[in-house]
Length: 355
Image (cartoon, rainbow, N blue to C red; front, side, top):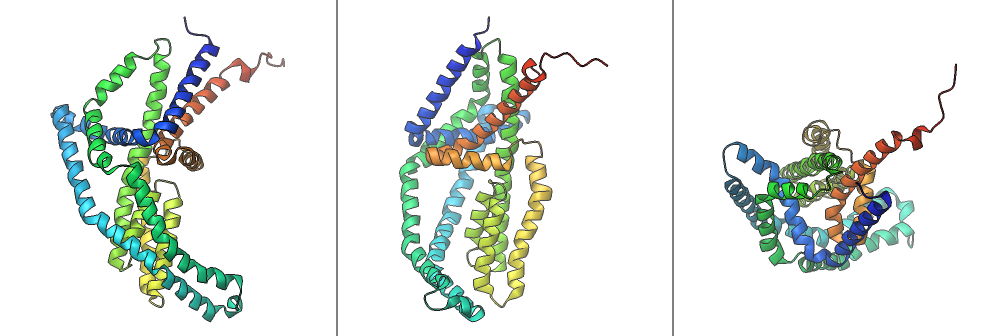
């Protein structure tokens, strides 16, 4: 006999409270395990495909792990130093950008640049503020990242956790299935399948889209000649995960830097804009439909809200779990709406009117 609804609500409420407390107090500690689990979840379909090709689970996991480590090492040695160098150079050149912008306004709109005007004071302070505090902010971010995501955790714990979770993924899913309450096991399996479909379509699909677009933007902008093309491509690629934000911020940053570097060279400036226009055409018509699909069920506004709330409450760990939780809540909300519309509470007890 199933438990009464009140007891079920009590138990699930206790479970949610424990989950929130764990995130609140152990966020920094469990971060490597969350990252390792996310990596294992991301790579599980690859392991399954290798198994279908005849390889054992152990050999599939070893091949995937070695390939991932090689790619990560190449990125750390070849790309990350260049990315940091360009970011620091961009911070240092901010005052000159502000001065160029000030001169532009002085020439084109002298009435706005009278002595003591708000526009003049704002533009003069932007460059020095970025120069004085930009480096400190960047260094503080790096220090906090190092303290939160420890180097040892990144280089040792995360790969080890990802390896073992990927190796035992199917067994863990089977064990969890055995522990499901028998009365509700079919419903839970259905909901879990829908959540997995949503996550698979969004995380794996959008992760691939982000990497492809980031690489495209970085390479294309560097070929065009934009000084900080790698930084712009990295920013645009990462922020593509948040709908519309990546294109807006990346495009504004690229065109803004292009105005300072290519002022008067309208062909080069047009090529910078064309890179982003072409990237958005490819993303909207090829990459996102093919890799993500149209039936994900994660509305952009809901996703941005979840990232904002969980990021503000639990920091970087909250942002890591925001997307899975947003997907789960969305699936549960749709299930609840379906149950409600099929209940007597929705349809009522009134008999249909007589003709």
